[in-house]
Image 1 (cartoon, rainbow, N blue to C red):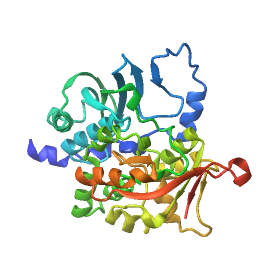
Image 2: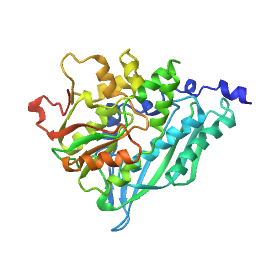
Image 3: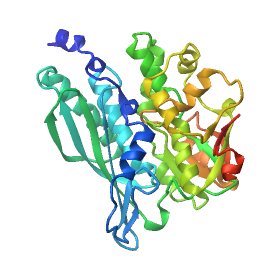
Image 4: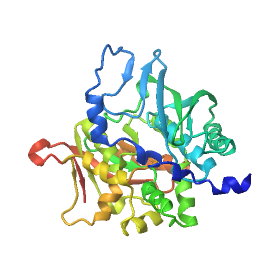
Length: 356
């Protein structure tokens, strides 16, 4: 049996992997625009209006329920690692709202005629191990027989209604802090080509299985004004969601961006995912790059991050406290990458996000 398992390459079963298989932002916006929104209750504090990370429903004066779901096809070949990555990614949306996760439900779609049950079992075990690390049970779920392997979670959490961290409440003058380095999508592309080194894989795995636990502590900081996590739409895409929701612009310095070391080497050689180009097309005219910027810089800011880092907008006075919280919880590469400014609108060329 072990020989059979060793020959299974999960990524061969999927046309895209991880958050790189998300629907492109422009297509998603068109789909959502065509969907009517009716009868929203006053207790629904956060819905689909600003493409936030999770829905939030007020239960009482001291509790709000946070609900999210996330699932995708394999980004790595090892089934246990795939389960860990998918679970970490799903739970991240709870932390990105400043909430504490309380339990999860498993979403499982597997090609039963192609994958041995032992492989599927390892995927589920990987997901359960991360939930145990987060201190939550998998309390149920749903499974179906499909053509491609799919795994993820529905996750529920709790937060005080007054401490919800939206992606639309940033303020001009806020500094931007990124909790994890970029480059996961680039490394996954190198992995699929069979070119990723053992060290590169280890770095990718360490990043994608690190729970974004600082989100709970950030909820307690009034000067943290907005919060999201960087996933399938890349740094530029998720920062644009903050800018659009808050009606602000952003200035980001390339030299300050934390990047996984081997990813930087690969992207400069042209290695990237197909989702990178789809993301770029979805941004419209709202992203500005320096004149003559090398192609790798565009690929980096559009790189889909599976289980990426938290992106924090906070008052300058809170910058060191936020960075200290990340450091305390093991996020050694967390960095300040830019700042938010007033949005000048179309008179400034329509660019809300400027990289320099």
